[in-house]
Length: 433
Image (cartoon, rainbow, N blue to C red; front, side, top):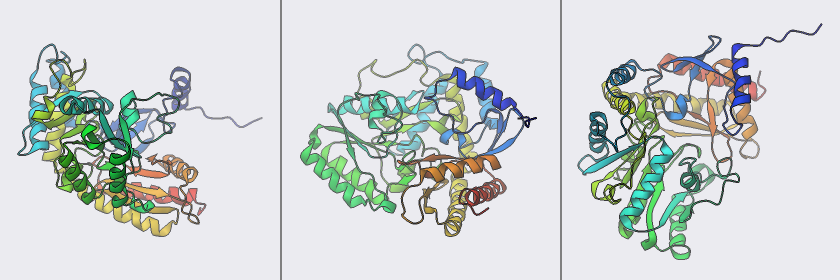
């Protein structure tokens, strides 16, 4: 008689998922979540996991923060949706005012809201082209800007995001992104920009350069502040707009509200999303007033953009970040995480490098003998961590980077628990146990 195989409620849900949801939507872990709070989630069987993915950077204030839940509940009893193109409502205007001040400081700014990060990116490009009357957009290798047509064109990874989805949007040109570990220097990247201007498109035909101050899906690669300042100088010299994509880096992830602040520059346009809504879908473009007014009336909008519930959640998120001092917490927790990951790197030669800014940290997994990217080992590490109760995901051009996106409200004890599990996962995947 063969051994009986226990079928869990998660298994039943996942079987239904396979039948009802296309394979193109990948679910990283065989897990169905029923409850979540802070940095923890529970599956349908009641098993607890530490969530160090946070909705892929959406939950800087954690799952179901009481202040966010209360704000949404209050708003739900008044107005859930009106469509801002039909009638204005206080939350949208208040959120715009607040972000204008937080991004612009002394610079006069305006904001417009959408639903997803990809929408924000596409509209930032529309605004840039509308204002400059130029067609060209420069983006970077390894960039991730979304999955819609223009956003996937801007995205600098062929697999899995481009597949056979072309032809892609025109007018987009690509540059290398600095990567100290792989010896791609900022000087090399700036020289490539000079060459692009000479060989492919003249500066007076470029509307904007779009850059993630720290690449997200590309491998948690920070752009050196000197590189960001050089880009700012070059764009100002040629009348080109600088767009900072802060969809993943924004709202405290790197230790400042926005990552561009650490380079001491002021971009022309900033895209925001993810942690702005504390779990509700909202995105936006914030930028200099004269630039934001480039498109004519009717040129911007979206049915659900700046939904009333999402605006209420976003305002509460900004309150929580300030009241709970989460920027300082990001720096403190990030320093601790970086130190502990470096200790693990000394113990496990498969960790080629540790990098990141603030609480946005990652390790690159390589073959210790060759230094070559090891995607298979990365997958084994993630699987081992999952079975010990820790959720992590991969990133990088070669999918060999483990990224840490825990909520900023993660406690020291939860961080230590996660690092202990990660240590055990490394040991199991590398054959030490």
